[in-house]
Length: 109
Image (cartoon, rainbow, N blue to C red):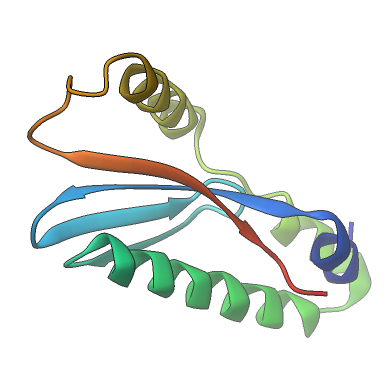
């Protein structure tokens, strides 16, 4: 897999959680994370981090790109994302102390 294949074919899975003044966002497909004070801040920072990461990978030899494009977050964090998304969907009022959001970031061609 190369960066050009990612750019044309991939939506990147991301997840954010936090409360007023303290947010974290994670890119589940590339094992990237950012922190900030609001959802909007971490959403934008994660977009920037993904863009910079893909730019870095784009500069690598094609034979090395694949190992950087298949670097997923640990299984435990993936399961946490799935469980929180499920609980949030089923019980909208079940998590009053923290907010969370799953979202996709589409790579530009």
